[in-house]
Structure formats: C-alpha cells, structure tokens
Image (tube, rainbow, N blue to C red; front, side):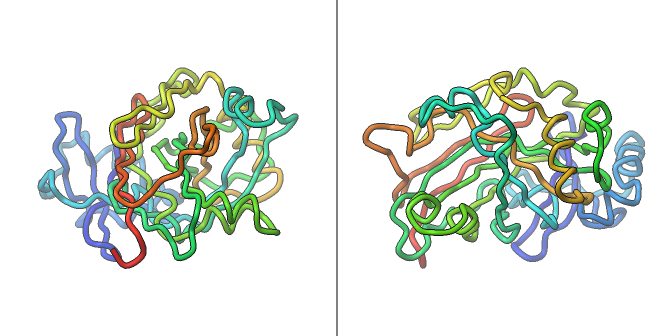
Length: 285
C-alpha cells in the first residue's frame, strides 16, 4: 500500500496511490497521516478501505501537488556516515555506533516543491536517503522486534548548508533545518509491500548528471538496528521519521566541491519507492 498526501501548502489531505497508478483522495474517510492516524490503527483501517475498492474516495488529477506523505512529525532524526562509501569519501573512518543528529521538522515539504537557498547560504548540498516512518510508540525496543514498529518507507533528501553545518560553531542542526531542506515522497510504501530494505538502489542526478549511485546493502547499521538504537535515547512516536544516511557522491565529496546553485534540478530515487525532484531557487524567487 502506498500513502500520499495532496493539496495546497497548509491544506494537505490524505490519499492513496493505487497499483494502477491512480491517486485517490481519502480525506472523507480518514484523518491526516500523523501521530493520531498511526496510533489508532489507521494503517489497518486504510488497508481494508483500499481492498474494498476505496468506496467514497474521489479520484485525483495526476497533476495534483503532492505533499510529504506523513504530516509534520514530532521528530526528524538523521543518521550520519551510515554508508561505508560515504564515510570513505571523507575521513574513511566507519563509526563504531550510529552518528545521530536532528533536523527540524519544519524543514519537511513536498517531493517536488522548490528548494529555497536561504540568505547568505554558500554551500548547498544534497543527500538521497531512505526514510523510515514509525508506526507506534517505540522506547527501549530490541533489534529483533524493531521492524514491528515501522509503518513504511519513503524517499527524503537531507539538504544541507555545509558552511553552516561544518564551519560555524555549534551542532549540525543549523545547517540542516532551513525551510524546504527535507522534501519527502512521492509516497510512503508500507512494510507489507516493501519487505526488504537491504538491497535497494539509491541515486541522485543534478541537471541529468548522475552524482550518487548507491546501494542500501552498503549501510553500516541496518534499519532494524537504527530503530532499536535510537529508541534507547528518545521515545519514537507514531509518524516520526528516521533518515538513515546517504551513499557517496554528495557535492562536498567532489574535488573541488560541487554545490548547488539556483536553477539546478535535483532528482532523487530509491528502488521500490519512487523519485522526487526539486528545482533550486534563491530566496524570493
């Protein structure tokens, strides 16, 4: 099953992407895809409705604006240096345990929304990542049980202002959290449909040129390990999102670095989920 959200910014509604490619509005039957939805058995109710033919659901235009497939999460947790090739393109050291940082959930936006370069930004970079959506409250869970706490998966781009992340004092979060720095989509694929995340291709192109071409099997820490690990340090709530790291090929990894500029078009894809695409614009464009 594939969940979507659609509509104008600030007025998004829940829907589904059917196997035949059609989009169907679910707002007359279901609440938005947030904490309450996941915590109240929403996925099972939605599955029953879809299996019954989406009775009462209105078919949507394929040109409708898609939003992030989950409503703004309480937390957006990110994992750094979680691909061996990505670690190698910098200092070459693979971490002994996951590198965890936060990204403001206000950075979330739709899969094809414009990415806005903030004022005084110098080094805008891209990172394609597999995002995990949490299904139910997770606290101090064991790895063997972790996938039972996952609702599904989506594509996220962890956009970063590298100067603010690396060259200014303080934590990474201020280089990660600008508005539009976390586009997600095009849908959330549930775990019943995407059952294996260890063998997925991830890719990024900029203006049609391939920059990233990775494989989820190159992860240092698996999805189940990450969910369990993070739950030891914070309670994960239904609808929370974990971005699981990026493969090699980010702009900062080139010599010289290849950062994004206004007018660039960035397309990010993950096998089994789909593609998202953003145009980079300057503030006020």
